[in-house]
Length: 521
Image 1 (spheres, one colour):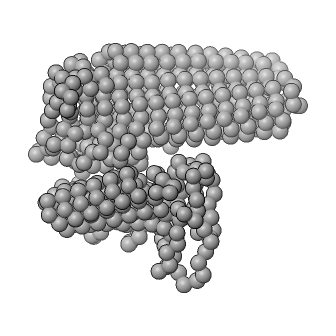
Image 2: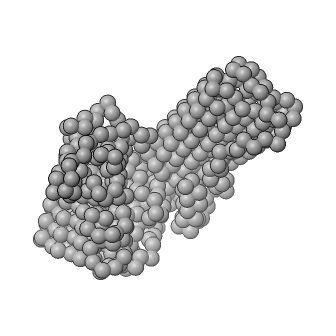
């Protein structure tokens, strides 16, 4: 999965930035499988508290206690097993695995590979070109000296690249990444993250640059630091989702993703760039671009900055920049097999052509439908008013906008692909099935799932304000509701079926009887 996060954004950045000056960071951050335990030398026995290892290539397994394991010289393979272990690779190219427990792992000299596995781990690669993987838990990874590759995994991680040209990928969770000195690649497209390039000509990516990845629904803070940096963020389709970007000193290139929408789509939160200068460049990526699309500039309300507008909609705010020219800004888009279909200020009914169309309802209480013959991935935006949006056979994106909207995914009405729904402002109702992703935004929202159609993913459930409805269309007795805690939040079960995953929701605030109801039909 991390390979997609890294290779695809680099490809797009290389083709879309003005001068193509992305850094030569190491982009090989794909997690390797956990090290095996097939020994080529006899296994060194260890008891809790014992320091093991020889001058050769050792294969050392810990115990279920709190071990202190030292590999010594040689290319060692060490597995801490259970317990709060301290593992020292020392000299050589070592493979180190903390396994379960909150472990401290030190690679030492050599090109080491270290896995935190379960627990809140601390991993220091030492000298050499190391590959560090936090995996589960809230981990701290430090590359130290060498061109290192760091991958946080799940949990709220801290990654420090250290010296040289490092590659950092936070993974899931709310992470803090610091590239350190060198020309670093810093990536995190999931969670509410803080990304720092520090010194060097860095490439920093906090936005999804491909439709295959879900939209980032949390606002990131990105700091390029010194050097000529390439920084990618995104605008917000839900409240609080836009990124704040700071280039730092140097001639920086900013890239903003408004993917999921088209020219003129409503942006609730525009991206903020805090230090845009006459030497910087900005590129905005949208899904659809035609000859009539208008790019314009306007002063901010206080007169101290500049708004960047596409067809009259603000996509970016450049703080403190009053001498910006259109020559510093460029629009780019995919070649999409579809058309834009616009509504009016009245109550419109719009249908997709079955391609990758964009339906814009504008004002009024509109009905927008992609449920027509064809397999295109349509984008539906209701705009102002109380709108009804219906997905089709493709992987559609539904944006309610202002008003109390009703959105229905294609899984519910046909054997379609999974859809993404964004309520925006208002008290919205989202109806979905297996694989659909729902984000309510502001207001008291309802998320409805058919118990027979799999699991929905809710990204912004607010206990006490929002409600999950489980629709049972069967003829048998009603099943019991229950929930379990998982890494991603809470999973709600109807009988033995998982019907919803509520991301970021915790048992401390979730009340099953209040927040979930059953509908028999």
